Length: 67
Image 1: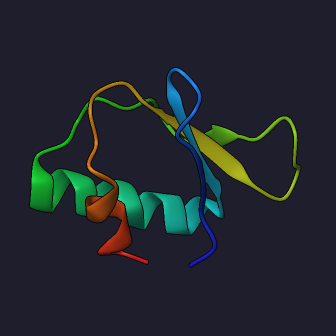
Image 2: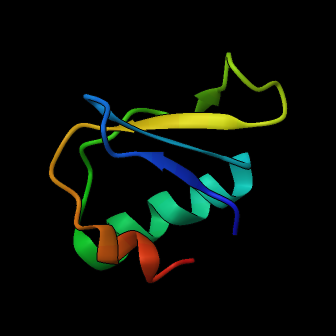
């Protein structure tokens, strides 16, 4: 899974393939009850990728579980 996360941004941005991002959001929702995020949108900086934003605290280990 090739996902890039910009932890230094507010809100945190998560970039990658749309299908992989959806799997990540499903994992965060189902396993950690994390729901404070945007919808998945086309990435304006990279046409081949998508992006979503995290609006609440998210433990990096939760994301590592999927990768």
